[in-house]
Figure 1 (cartoon, rainbow, N blue to C red):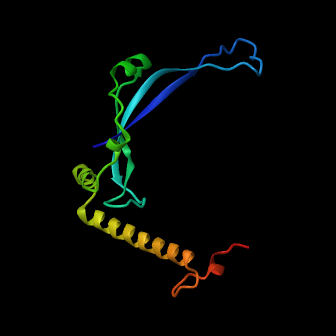
Figure 2: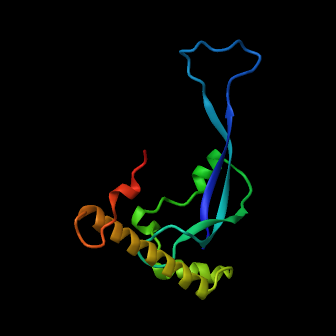
Length: 144
């Protein structure tokens, strides 16, 4: 249930003993190795449409570095974007399985997210209909 990140170690292939290249020449960049990390998910604070918001945590598992060629031969095929989305049920399962989040904490964050969503909807309604009852006075939001 961890998100995967790839770290590239790069090497600029220009010998320091050589005179500087003319400004119109391009430098070459190559990569020596690739390190893959699995980052664990934690309860986040972003506003999502349904379910608990998730963020990457600080904890991670790191795999031994690979050469670029070895990585290209062995990495899994890329998944379509639709398969990358997590359902609210799956996000909740990930958070509870990792053990650092309780059901109560998830519920609290979901209530906070719902309150922010309602407040934003009210602000949007007030901005679209300035003369309606309960509208926010635009003068309170101007910066001089």
